[in-house]
Image 1 (cartoon, rainbow over the protein chains, first blue to last red):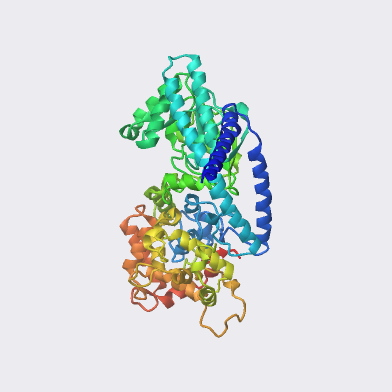
Image 2 (cartoon, each protein chain N blue to C red):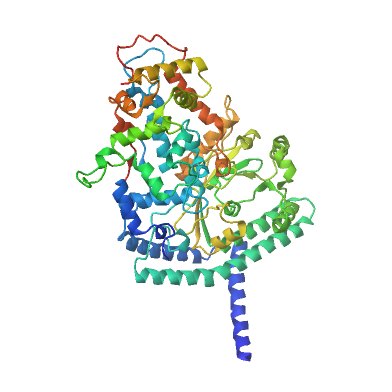
Length: 445
Length: 195
């Protein structure tokens, strides 16, 4: 019995040693021991091997249908005779166009797939992404089993420890720094505290982050906009610089963290009631930006989490504040872990647990050159310009659809536009042509 | 470790659907994934709301009529078989290998069946006739508020006049086929499914 305690104590000591000296201290100074790098290399090898084995079994094609392009005008055109007066007549075959478009969207559409996790072309040995793959071979199953053991029994406890340490360090550190008077020392200390905590949290997720174009990093008094995939985005970005967060005050643990963070440096937290008032929000943010010494604000204009295969409509509110916009693209590598937070399926806690039992999080972050609104460009156009730049950089699909479609219905306006377009085809811009002197015979050709 | 989606779809079912609709094995499994991703309630059937959740379909002027085509008379849920049966109407005709099932009844994607699908879009009460009223209603769906009642009425009248051969002031299915005999239905009512 005594021996057991000794052994346990010994293991615990080693554990603490590993955590503190191999992870925490390097995190404070922004160094890396390269362990994660080696881990990733090994993982890539194993996953490639697993992929080959699976591909011997089957070929998967992601798309279901191939759409014929063509506008309403073009598609309906060939159905008519060469009656080229203002507008043509209605034909029973006009419904075919709408029918075909409708069935195509039922078979495969551009929007609904963005709100669920990306389907991988090969399996990455995580049960949760195993949608279309069946039992392949014994060796693969053994590797998978071993992977489960490693992920749940070795990596997971380590990660949880780090996360707890990271968060408590954030709370304690910021509260302590908050006692100091306003000065450059305070700012420097607050930066150090924030950076350390986020680095520890990143280690807690086994995150490997590659920053590109760091000369474009957001400066003070600017606004940083990025595409949104998960709450972890904040950790990813904050590993490389300090930002002023914007958001709603929550209760519970989140609230404690938020309140302590704001003691050390000015973040912008809103009460729930204030969030409804767009004007109040904009003016507060504007005041923050105007004070050029404050940290850059971090905003996610999509308003909701998208699954990292596309960028959806940017809400123009963030682009009305003024100031310089620093666009950032965040692209996760889906082979190592699915970072997308499907908030309708998982709550925050189960999401974080899934994150901590994935292989790793591998991210690429590109800082894009700053943009400002040009003359004659309104906020919506500016938003679209920034969105295209971000999508372009990350190889993501640029969609005009609103991320709010995750939960809400599409606006009637779009249907009305379609109806208007069709009406102008059959009736023409200048009204009805009753005695249409077309070629004799039925118009329905 | 089995897969979530295809364990619920047995090989025998896939074979049956293949015979009935003409889709290939991989097409059926992929469409099954699509079916399950639309099925938010996860009960193996789709309701009208599940279809309405597709934005591109919700903004289609004939969206409601198309959704209706999936549901048999009086029912509110469609299972995977029914889903595939309706989609099968839009398979390209040249995909039918010769003599695959020569003895079987007419394939779901024949020209006649495609026209029947379109006919049922107009025939709201399913009485096998398109009345003036029904035509008006569907026209109204397609044009919205942009055309006046009188203009729309004239359009409907003229359409019926030209198609109606037996003078009953409505369009039967045979009259419908006759009117559209020169239209390339095969191309207009087909979707290119990838193999």
